[in-house]
Each structure stands twice: as structure tokens, then as C-alpha cells.
Length: 119
Image: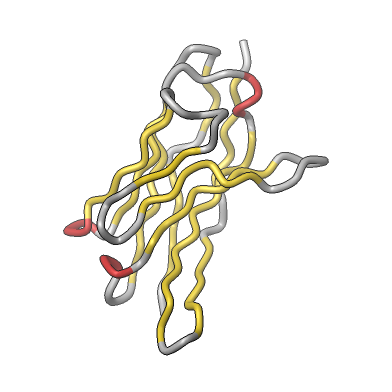
């Protein structure tokens, strides 16, 4: 059982920065891979970034070079540093933690945090 709590969203101007946090409770957090997704009404959910238990990361083309995903297992927290923000980055951002255990997926979601990029 893992609970995820997201924070750090807000209103920023284009070109600004935000750091989102996904704080996890529960055991074995270091064994989970973590995704950041974003959702805008009328659009499909988009996978923004992934960090695996070993620390390797991947990014959507739309955010490569601007966003950085990282994790601090000692704090049970994953971060998404967002720089050079654009209006099209506006969305609700969700944290998703998962792992494979005995042939089945353990899959958990946070409640989401709103990011609005506007002048």
C-alpha cells in the first residue's frame, strides 16, 4: 500500500519555473518506478517523464531539455523540476508509482496538482 501526495503546482508566467513534489508513504518506495503524467480537459493524458528504480529517466519530446525528474529515496519523494515553462504546459500533473510483483502490477496514483502557465 502506497499513498502519494503531490504539491508544488501553481500559477507562473511563461518562462518561469516550478518544482513539483510527489511524496510517498508506505514501504519499498525505492523499488518503484515513478511517472509524471499530465491531463488537460479535452486532451489525452500525456506521459511527461519516467524515473526507474535505478535512476534512469525518460522524457516526452515536448519537455526534453526543460524538465528534469529526480528522486530522493531517503525522503520518499520524486520531483519534477520544470523550467522555461510554456502556456501549453498548463495541465493537472499526476504522480504514478508502480512495480511488478509476482507477475502483477502494483499501481498507485496521486490526487494531482494544477499547473497554470499564463501571463
